[in-house]
Amino acid sequence: MPVPADEESRHRPLLPRRPRDIASVLETARHVADDLADGLTGPRVPSAARGIRRLLGAGAVGLADLSGGLVSAGRLPAGADTAAMVEDVLHTEDRRRRGEVVALPLVVHDELAGVLVVAGPVRPAAVREVANLLVAALERSHLEASAEHAAEAELRALRAEISPHFVYNALTVIAGLVRSEPDRSRELMLDFADYIRYSLARHGEYTTVADEFHAIETYLALQRAVLGERLRVQVRVAPEVLAVAIPYLVLQPIVENAVRHGIEPRAGGGTVQVLGEAEGADCVISVEDDGVGMPPATAEDLLAGRGAGTSMGLANVDRRLRNVYGPWFGLVVETAEGDGTRVIVRVPRFQPGVMP
Image (cartoon, rainbow, N blue to C red; front, side, top):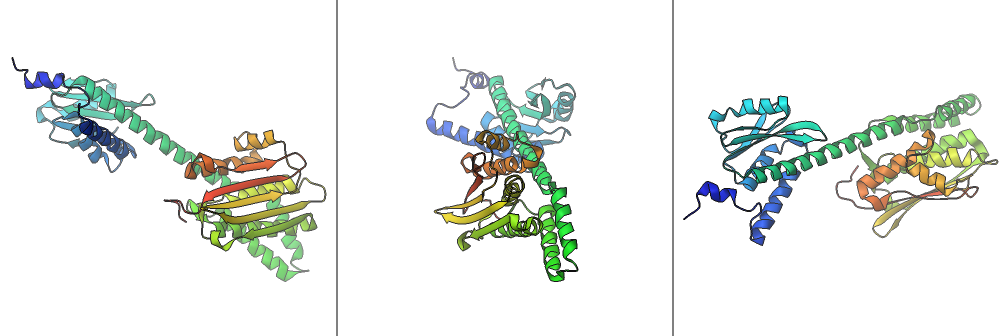
């Protein structure tokens, strides 16, 4: 006796048996997850709805965000009053069914994110699996958005981290030179303006090695005016890496730490060396001082964000480098108590999506 069509659909396996069809299903699922990268309010939600409809073989599929706005693929039955079902789910967070139409809540991190609506004779197990797929995609979207907001907040904090002590000393030195060395005073005032503008201005996410080196040379010129013979400086950068794009404010915090925590506490001062060069496909920049150094465990704490607030810049830089280039491109810190510190930044000379 032949099996009725609806009965056959209820016994159909969740994934097709043929490898080619399985690959097609997995590819569609991946596209659905990618389409939800911006959540249920993003521009690719219609494409996600079409993909879900293909996965389920449903007559129609709808996705609703928290506002109740429904984006559908296929024609949802008018008699089911789908809008009312969506409102019910949004208010109760409970599943609703009317005839062949089912509406399920999509809960992300214990919070309602939206509603999935499916119309047609589709197996409940398949609908549940697709709902789980959507929740996972929305969780990833939420985590990525949170990480992006956190990185932006950290960068804003880094821009605002200008030492009042340094600003006071720099302006005092400049003021003291106004009468005795007016030309020198004017140069330093221009350097100070460049330093403030670069540190606080609303730059994009990336800049160039050339701009970062200009910023640190400006900072070091001001610090030399403040510290005099106690600070010696060597800066060298190879021409072939000047145009390399890097995250904004990567080098300046490292150089500032070298001066503030390496050279200033040392009796007699010391030297800060900054070197930028190409090594194969990478750009390698090192910032080295012969200051007081620190125990390796302290450096490890700084990179983990467990250091003093005045050194939060190293953890910020390390985290941003890893986020942009991958875990193998973070900072390397070589140090020992009394033996100075060397911080190495290694980035690809060319990275897709990274441009000033």
